[in-house]
Amino acid sequence: MSTVLPYPRGVPRSISYPEIPLHALLENSARKYPNRDAIVFYGRKLTYAGLWDSTRHFASALRGLGIEGGDRVGLLMPNVPQFVIAYYATLVAGGVVVAVSSLNPADEIRRQLGETGVKVLVALDRFLDKAMQTGSKLVVARAETYLPLHLRLPSHLKGVRDHPDGIEFERLLKSPPAMDAVEIDPRHDLAAIQYTEGTTGHPKGVMLTHFNLVSNALQTFHWLRGWGFSAKPQLAGRPIVVCAIPFFHIYGMTVGLNEPVHFGSTLVLVPDPKPEPIMRAIHGHRATHLPAIPAMIRGIVEHPRRSDYDLTSLTDCVSGGAPLDPEVAKMFVQMTGARLFQGYGLTEAGPVTHCTPVDGDPLPQSVGLPFPDTEAKVVDVQLGEVEVPPGQEGELIIRGPQVMSGYWNDAEATASALRNGWLYTGDIARLDERGLLHIVGRKQERIVSSGHVVWPSRVEEVLRTHPAVEAAAALGVPDPLRCATDVRAVVTLRAGWDLDETRRSLTELCAKHLEPYQVPSEITIVRSLPTTPLGKIDKRALVQGFAERSGDLA
Image (tube, rainbow, N blue to C red):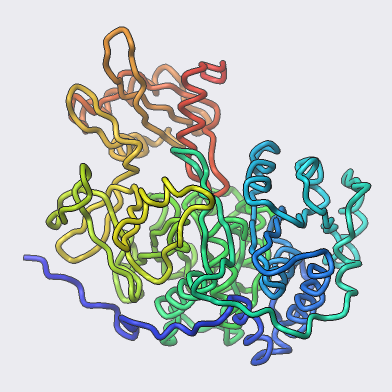
């Protein structure tokens, strides 16, 4: 009989969390490591002392633009140095960060900025078309400012235009530095309003306090490296982190920014998170740590030029956001020699709540154990009141210091998600007898077909075992004529596979490995699937496109 796994050695079950503002993580590292490289951007370096100095100057400028305690500052930028400066400067000025995805359509960006009442928007010059008519004071950051000299001119020639009402970011850095600290109540004052990805519903603004984000940074630190573990030597004596996960996503914000800054790591910024730039960054800077998503890991493993890059400096890679194919994981570990972790989280929890332990399975099949001070239960799906036994599926609920204070201006959604101190995640999961968490799917995605519950993840898992399939999504499509719901699947194929023959073999594969009620009534092959900035398949967009039959189907 299996027994519950012991808690990872060296990791405390409980942490004493300092009640400090989030920007104190940067201030402390600047004090401890003033001459250490904090940021590397295409070879250009900025030390911790220099980063903190720029942050204080920009904070003073934000106050000059009218930012006071609790005012919102929007950030519309990829992973560039200006994002880091503006992020911490907003906090120093007493403001609240609203980091929006530059990949969103302009109307969604305007909705998020308008809904949160953003007073000042800091936008990269390349995204000025999406920054129009937001009603905010506009600060324009130029992409080439922090590039080495030999890259500045080519960058400037890429069609960048000015905004007539925009204030130059670089001019604001000349403001006198902020000297007096704005008083912050870490337990109650917001540090960020971060929007959910909205893969199954409308994106909602998640309110995260300074305490929430400091807590999650420290939980991540203690779990992954707080007790000195390293899979192999780190040549620089500290982590060199490749930051390809966008900072405007909560995963990148905590695991790629706040936690590494707390530890005094060097951040190698990758604004274009494609496989080759990531490999180039690892190779060129002998990087040791890579926060990643499965799409990034697969892209590296399958890249035709992967042998051109030495990736063996990597000691650790954390994968999150979606399931990771075990074969892809195995190939990545063989290529890099890195320790691979899988984690689980959600925007509403800052985001990380679970991770596989460093002394556990090197190719984990679960998303691990709960973080320190984090409680997790699996409860019945109907009422969410009865805890179910190990092995049984139900809704995952979470309690811990990283859990949000609620949704911005949405009391009804807040009351539904936060009940008696517990966060109802909307994720269906099971705990095995060792205490490890396994995610099954989203509660909103479940399909009731022929009187049976079908979880799309099970259908997708089978489809992805076919060598032709690059990505797969399953969903329920109502059939009004039969008053029923059909299971449908949508897939993209690798190059060189015959459509009709592959469709037939996929149907046979499903019939062999799935129950009859789980087998898709139709498998549609498309050129591409809509995805979120974190690489998840956007089921909401997919359902809309499927209903409209937009003509993109093969």
